[in-house]
Image 1: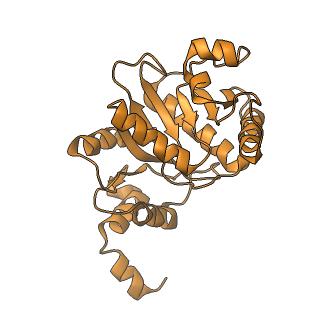
Image 2: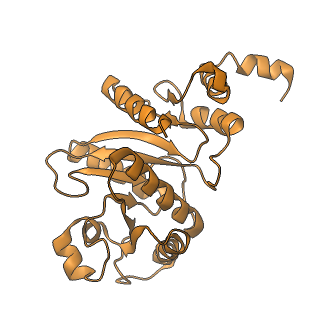
Amino acid sequence: MTIEKAKELVKDPVYYGMLMLKDEKSGADGLVSGAAHSTSDTLRPALQILKTEPGTKLVSAFFVMEVPECSYGENGIFVFGDCGLNENPDAEALSEIAISSSKSFEQLVGKQAKIAMLSYSTYGSAKSELTDKVIQATKLVKEKESNLLVDGELQLDSAIIPEIAEFKAPESPIKGNANVLIFPDLNAGNIGYKLTQRLAKAEAYGPLCQGIAKPVNDLSRGCSSQDIAGVVGITAVQAQK
């Protein structure tokens, strides 16, 4: 970084906003961007200026999904992670995403997180490197945070439908009542949230960021004014932490 480059960057509203967050005297508590900026244009200055939250190894993204007339999850409310940032997380990264997502769910919804580590397999019904990654990630979550209610590897129906869980995974501690869904990679996560949003007419708030030192959230450039207002509200709740 040079003085000349810094003088140019500070003219960018996202960089300026991050500097406001960094300076506690500015009065700024959170930042929402993305309606007119790419994800990288939002997260790059966040990581350069704010850095990661103490004790957090990984910055990741999640969506709050609100599905109308739905009895699954927490009365239709879910956290989906990571659907916007980490392309192909290994088992270690996937475990960190699960832990961060559980904390985000409990902070925003005020209920116990029930985490499903999703796969195309349930309890070894198929076996490959892909399923092994999810199994290992589940094991790591349990080792790191033994108090969390987590299970995997699970297919989606085994994760959210109690009747199917009773048949496919009768010993599952979440019993088909998952409200935090952890996808194995960005392909699955992005497709999953968009399918839910469009076919179930769900409200999708995000991608929201977790693991940054201050509340910073990134909207899709296809967002509506209602999406912006919703994410601003969520950012305010995060800032109260």
